[in-house]
Image (cartoon, rainbow, N blue to C red; front, side):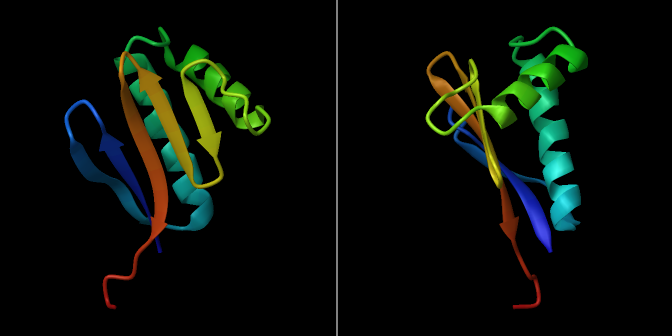
Length: 96
């Protein structure tokens, strides 16, 4: 099963955002969490503009960062001020 983790450089804090999820649901949940955070940080004014930024960053070529956001298949990074908010999809089996 997949979990979405979040690490924040400003608060030196790591947390499990959600899980367990299927791979597809994990990517959708990561997108949702990143969009929410873009609005919380004031980078975007609403969910609609946050989604446009997310889609643009998702489509950006390797080496090109779309403004404050970079997206990979299993992660995302929001850059603000001198800090980063990172999201990562990880495999975890609690029975191991």
